[in-house]
Amino acid sequence: MLRKVVSSIAFAAIVSTSVSIVVSQDLCAGPVSRTVKMQGQLGKVIVNPYKVAPLTAVIDSDGKIATDISVTVLGKPNGGQDITYKVSDAAFLDHAGVPIFGLYDGYLNHVKVDYKLNGKEVHDTYKILTNPFQTRIVDGKFEQKPKVEVKKVAKGFENRLYMVTLMGSADYKDLAWFKNDKIHGAGEWLEPSEIYMVDTKGEIRWYLDTEQFYDKYGRNIDDTGRIMSINMLDNGDLLFAQSQKYFRYSLMGEKSFSRKLPRGYVDLSHEAMPMPNGHMLLRVAKKDYRIPGTKDRATTIRDVVIEVDEGGRVVDEFDFNKIMGNNVFRKDLIVGLDARAVCLNVDMNAEHIEVSDKVPYGDHASTGTGRNWAHINSISYDKSDDSIIVSMRHQGIVKVGRDKVVKWILAPNVGWTKDMSKKILTPVDVNGKKLNCERASCSDTDFDWAFTQHTAWLSPRGKNVGHMKTLSVFDNGDGRNLEQPAFKEDKYSRAVEFVIDEKNMTVKQTWQFGKEKGWDWYSPVTSSTHYETDTGTYNIMFGTAKMLTKNDTEGIIVEVDPKDNDIKLEMALSTDKKPGIYYRTNSIKPNELFKY
Image 1: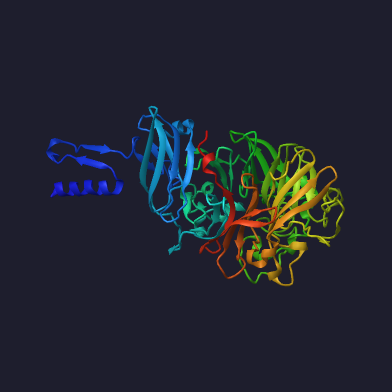
Image 2: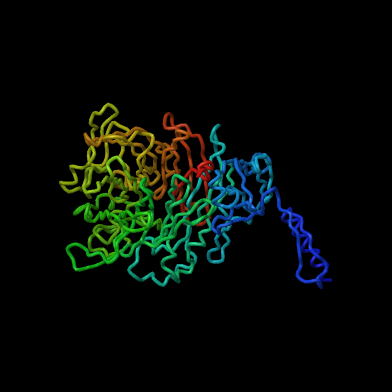
């Protein structure tokens, strides 16, 4: 009977792994022996080798040295998308084998690996089985994996890959032991993210197992909060943050580091930005901050940027409470915000926001240090003059030098103190003629300010040398013209490009997309836009379309040619994780991942 069981095990192994296994039947002779013949001429296949990227694998070198390696993860039959990339000699040594990236989930993948072994060409095909996409279970409800509807893919865009961040709902928020403590912002959210990559057929081809970073029970404050922005380094590594920690991982799942914030800082969210010198810019808050003019101490809210070196040590701090001075009490945009969208609170009956320096300290959209007066949600570094550009959702876009002095402000000239009013950029037309602007709007022009914007980044579409800068911005549009429209359906979001003349302190609008989509694509929060140098298109995510309706939130990804606004690619990502919302998107280029 026992021999039959062993035989059954051996047969199952052969069927499931496509390798031949011979098992000794003489159990009285000692331990069971076996002979294993692996697939191909290298070693065994290890799926999810670093435990955080389930749709990756390594084909072990088995002590052999392969060179001139090329990998193709074959698309599913009948039109699936192939993923092809080269593997450098260094990457082969790093993984002690061939790194496999871009597998389908819950599928027996076929992977072609071409290489040289001892100078001879080898052409192997491996079969690699993966587990299904790991969905989240919240309050006993089984959430489906995200659905992707591909609406258009132009020629030349068939092989694109897009990483997205979906911020979901909490598992056991009531168990957060720190929820009544003096922790605000990302520390209070205690809500996990799903980070995954889709191809142009709408298939998931990679995802990050965020359970490895996130304590859903809320017992460990250092392992809670949201993963929001993900920025890529030149070698394809990911830099991302989660409230009290920030991380660097490869897309294969190798950990470079997982670090706590330096002592004295909390609430790391929205942006962890790599710098050219290897340092990092982190959007944080300060705890035990002495509130000016009072005897109070409180945690600040989304208003501090620190620069840390390769070892995680602070080398500089941009404290916008000090940089902006009295302007922490500028309320003109805050009073015009839609209360339903400020803290992702989908309350259709919300009517107004109480704005006062008497509002309790904490994550409240109001004025003054210790409250959500700034809401910095993106950082861009200008290496030409060693300065930073920050998107302050509740104030405007501000450039600050290393001396902590404001260089310019891209926002309506309303509500600023006299010293800051001088820093406001003047809108001009394409010929440099000053536009007719009053308060928060300009007449007889397409020019418009950005309101409650995200991702105010220097755009490689411009040269960004000397005093001329090109900035791409996702203009969410809440509080446009510092007010709410008569009908909510009049709201719109857009991607927009500005060219700034820092010498003459002027700004002109050179491109926009999305205004024509109106309410259907209106995204009150999150979203991104950045220029793709390889395609000459702007990659845009309208991350929270339909959020302020009874429908499930939708993330819309488009690639747009700025020369004529022709849409080259369009896909819609839906979710039943209400109020789950999409944050940003990044394009992934496989050939950049394993070239070092």
